[in-house]
Length: 239
Image (cartoon, rainbow, N blue to C red; front, top):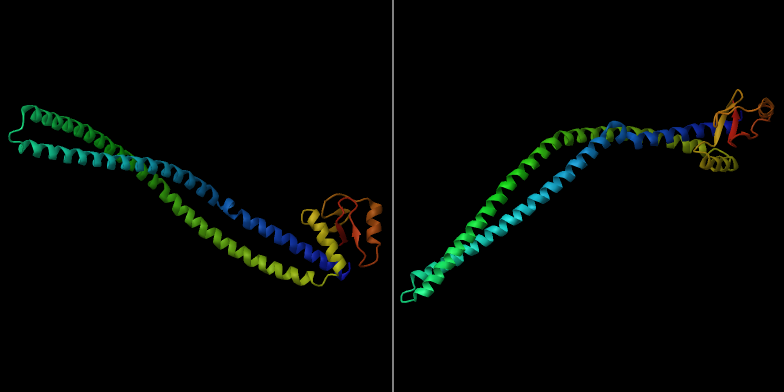
């Protein structure tokens, strides 16, 4: 095996390691369980948003009722003052004012009942929010623990990636341009593996068996001459 082909295998091994490290890094959140915890938290957060929206409606309703009650109270107070000051007014006018005061009092009582219902409904919604917060608290704590763990693992993998990328660049820089270009083209079309070892009579890339005639032909090639797997087309290096 020539130095160039040996270096090519080293580049391929480093490329394989880099791909594996990248896959490990991408899968950290899933394998650690972080994605599952965050998905559960997202579901509870959506439920909390729905409950909070209901509470917002109840709060707005209560505020509107309070304003109406206050308006009715002010109107009633104005009419009662007029009644007390209505010296010399006709009995019809006094009766009309008295009827309006009674009507306002009845309407005020109705609105106060509605306000009480809204307040009681808010108590129920507040209990729902408290229950959701109680369920979310341990999940949020667990998610934070997992995020720290994932970040730590990512940092370790990033260090390995940087080391592998540096070694890869150093090896690849010494490859002949034609061999490097051929390897990169094959690697792009063959799932990241452009070169493979010939182990006995098997291709290390596609793992298929080569014919005895083909194996002998490859092993008889002069050092440095590039062979190709007849099954998958990868650069094949006898070892």
